[in-house]
Length: 336
Image 1 (tube, rainbow, N blue to C red):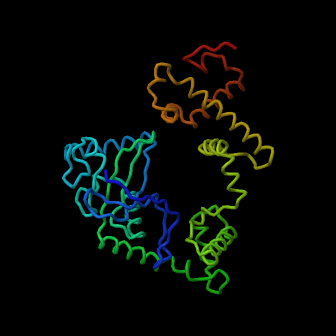
Image 2: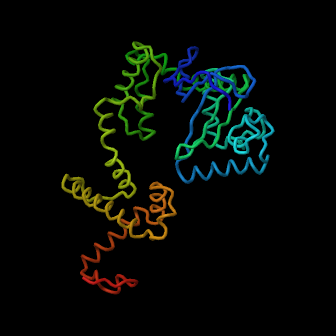
Image 3: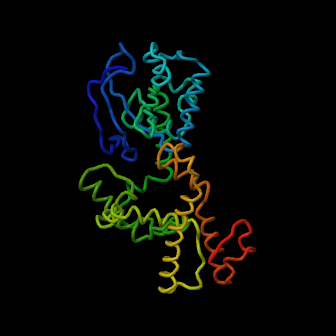
């Protein structure tokens, strides 16, 4: 690897010539993509493979490169003397036919291109790590001037097609498209009301016009009270997300019915976790990498909706007073 003179972590950025183009990059460093080259600004986009699915995809990507090119990469590997480095640290041009072998995700490729266009960078390094903080790969992507200009034209077309009013029409003017916005929110089945949209829009105008700062996503603008609530309520949000997977049709929406159904659903989440513990074999415990791996495997063994079905069946057996009968449980004997 090369030595880096400086590393910076910029905040939200905006292109001076086109305020509609903005974004956040993880790091910008001063250095070179290969030893012996002149120093320049290079962007860094950090990605972490935290799930079993993404870890497997990353392993398949490295295995593909190994099988196709062996231990030595033809396109200027940063440290060809190190077997691992020849696969972990590499450099490729955006126009190379093998580009998709190095960056398999189109979303990550577009994100690197966006950084290169926004900050006018020749290189963007996609840094990939695993769930334990270990470095899996560092891919230096060289973007051509032609590709960046073409990408800028695409963004300009999108701006002209549907975003120009966002930056040029004042909310208090007669040209403000109130009816069109209401129709769009209805068509998208958005949980946001027009009044909420208007409030966020005025906050955006204050950030942009009075504070002279880049515009963040409207969804990121939250009142302080709601932001504090989101930080203090992560456990309950997890249960809420779990219970939403099984929608229940209630006879009515009275407060008593809502509270009772909510209490019963919270009870099912506790039983669901107990099912996970019971269904796990003792000899399999040591095979899990961490708690997340165990949780993913348990969710595949017993999804939440199956737990709800099992609980409903048991409660119906109780209601019929035949919980201990052999017919209701042909494979087990229950003594009450």
